[in-house]
Length: 248
Ligand code: MN
Image (tube, rainbow, N blue to C red; front, side, top):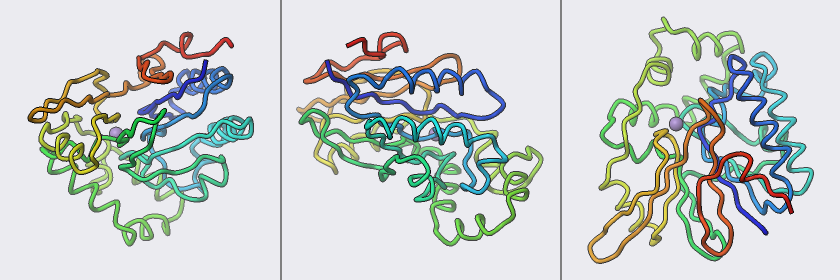
């Protein structure tokens, strides 16, 4: 039996080695009969450039992803609001394909809108301002030109008054705006959206006039692993790690 697996919001960080281990186990065990793995943002608690990966204990994660792609499992990674600086160097190190946010992909012939989800939280004006700032290539060049130690300080120092820190450390995550969800579904002409970010895993019906769509929200990896498993044609369900692991 084949499957496509979706995960997001792992927030991998050296401060939570238990979650890193869960992730490594997961990667080792999903290989059989998994067609594709989608990681829809916030794989890392923060990502501040490939040259900082060593200092942040992230190289093991890169190696684990590379092992998976070398086994022939395609892995598609979307940037989240914490790892928005993932770039080609990450792709080259891991063999993962970076995909745009949003992306429409055919999953077993069903067009599906994939997004990290924070852009749907339109009521959170502060966050949208932050996202506009850090998505600006000029801001990214400015940030990446700083020494690694300075970047780490900016990303981690809770007392820092920088925009970066104000925006990504102490912010409660608002839920998505329903009108933004409907607009995105209409714009892309699909009736299924899968996203993360809000850490509120659920299946939602979305009523749009006479049509009905579905919004699936992925869970985070704070207490345990969380994944969505899609078996063709349309068997879509959350799965515990042990279920998602195929025993073919
Ligand atoms: Mn997020």
